Image (cartoon, rainbow, N blue to C red):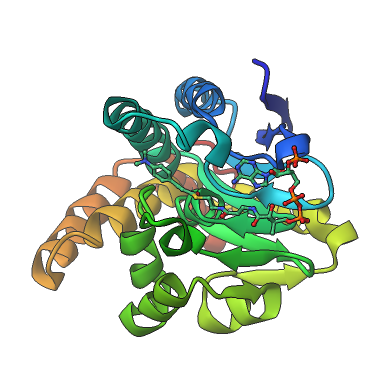
Length: 258
Ligand code: DAK
């Protein structure tokens, strides 16, 4: 892969988007490589947390590649959209927990790919925004939907209509970032959170993720029904037996299901 680096250690995969000269802008080749990478990761039982970041100290991802889009035909735009949809959907729905390590500009498609992750940890120098309306387009990698779900309709509309950029603290205040840390602690902070998640039952975490995601598109009654079904299924696992027995025996649990 030319623009994506995949490293795996201790059940944690780090995926680095590596086009620093273009501030890691997403062109078709990069989207295609991300799709390939997420396809590999979703099938790997030895990976339980995925951290997504950008290379260089300046940007997470500065958006879709404007130099590629400027002369794109409608057919090429459609192809790019379909490719991105597949890649983003894999990222959002993979069984692993995904953490965006936002190490600088997360604009347009960059903000959108961060929002397709489960959790966003922002470096103090992170900048979020949806500048598409200033380019004569609108967010097209899910921004109109995911931003409104994360921070509410009113704030999402303001950010999208004004193209205002917000810093890491403001992103934290409105709920777009889960946490803000000094830039030189960003990866450590992601690893610490990953470690905490890895110490829990991976099967339970993965099913909780899928129920939360599916519930976003359901009414409450159906979401609660889905939760009840998934909850019942958890009673068939080794981890449930081990977790509860370990509690009663006052010893640490050895949770292994995934
Ligand atoms: N695309 C291509 N190149 C980019 C880029 C981008 N999004 N962002 C930065 N670069 C390139 C710059 O052109 C420059 O290249 P050289 O001139 O050195 O060759 C290099 O990266 C460094 O950038 P700057 O010189 O501009 O650096 P500054 O520090 O001055 O400014 C900045 C940093 C991040 C504020 C600025 O680069 C900037 O405003 N970048 C553009 C941000 C932006 O508007 N992003 C949103 C793009 S639109 C679709 C669905 C969704 C989308 C598209 C299609 N379909 C369904 C088909 C999504 C659209 C977007 O994301």
